[in-house]
Image (cartoon, rainbow, N blue to C red; front, side, top):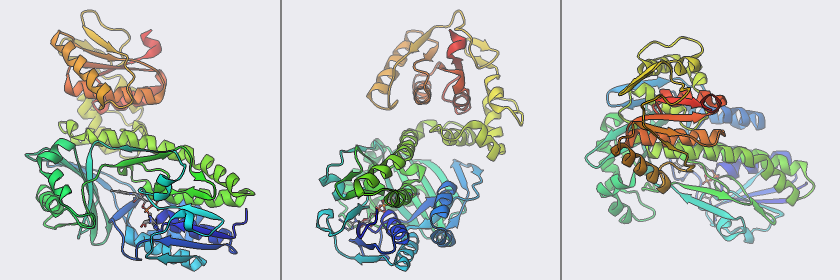
Length: 512
Ligand SMILES: Cc1cc2nc3c(=O)[nH]c(=O)nc-3n(C[C@H](O)[C@H](O)[C@H](O)COP(=O)(O)OP(=O)(O)OC[C@H]3O[C@@H](n4cnc5c(N)ncnc54)[C@H](O)[C@@H]3O)c2cc1C
């Protein structure tokens, strides 16, 4: 369709990028961005952009990507637990200051002929245009007042987003135990002299440290300095003598936004306004900018707005929902992270990389052979071969309290072992249903059970969730833990073994 006038609500990455791409695709269209903030004043510190995102941006708009890369800061990843660290190389991962990213996007939007009006909060229904692209962020007023069928899921854990005035050598994941509980930082450099520190904790730790009170006492536009000063002490080693700086920094629970519909009449949602995905997979900016690409393509390919919006949603929704599912698993993994601190850091890194089922064990082994080899050796007490890692993992023997197993794949339950079977289907192993399974497992252990077998549907999401539930029971109730899955899930099951989610596996057909 030929759009005569387009209004974009919100000058974040999604809105600015959509405005530029639309103006480039339809030069006669009058494109205006309405942003409530002032230029160069934004919340937040740095965001990460991975290789896959960069490829999509390159294809859509090579000029903008070139400037983003020039302003970005490449880094690898390190996980540190106590005094042990492992490092994973990542050639194309960059961090970029949100201010820099917005400055690049603004410059390119204006160069294409987009007008940007700053400093006034606007509502979608007051904007005079053929279409309104509502890119007004996670707290979108457009979404909550319109008929989009919004659903907002609030995370259990709490996090805050702050920064420091020095560049870490790598992105870093580091848990630190305190008298109140464990705090974990995900931190990454985003310029030659700055790093983002994202810090998360569980609700009990947060309350014990008094942060419920400091949060209440922090005005909406201020930073929670009580928490920042405390966290500076906690992460003193990681901060290397630097302070934590805030920018409207306060503890928050992550909100996962989902909408039944992304458009209503002439209004279409884009980016965080339509959907969010937990920050631990670093994909919010990516999704917003990819939405912009999808929307502008759909507008060019359809005769009117309803058809274009339907095409945009149909093309973007599968990708978005896949990322949201990965993000959901990642969020649950991070929220339960302190329970894994007894593992060696190499096994933790494997657990981290395979936590959402996105990175298969053998692919991770191909990119980080030293880390995976060390983790596999810790798992089996012998050196893994350079090839066929999954098969090798499954073939390792196990000596457990009362039984010995020649390999990790169980053909049948051995005589003399008392196993309790769970066929529960839970969506979230850490919610009430998961708590009930753990309570039953503990009771079974008290009554003499040697361990547990987890069985159920053979589809991949079910197997991955079963592995998570098995891990929780293994940690909290102890005993031998066996997880069933079809042969097609052998990669996920092998990753589960190396990551300490289970002790043995059983292939559904082989067990029958
Ligand atoms: C802690 C944390 C860490 C993150 N880390 C990463 C990361 O590593 N990588 C990554 O890709 N993403 C990350 N994200 C997500 C990322 O910041 C967002 O997903 C991304 O900014 C979404 O872009 P957007 O354009 O949809 O919305 P936003 O960037 O939120 O922009 C919305 C804009 O709309 C404006 N606005 C809102 N309402 C109105 C109104 N009524 N009138 C006028 N203007 C309005 C706002 O001022 C804002 O500028 C992180 C998010 C959080 C919370």
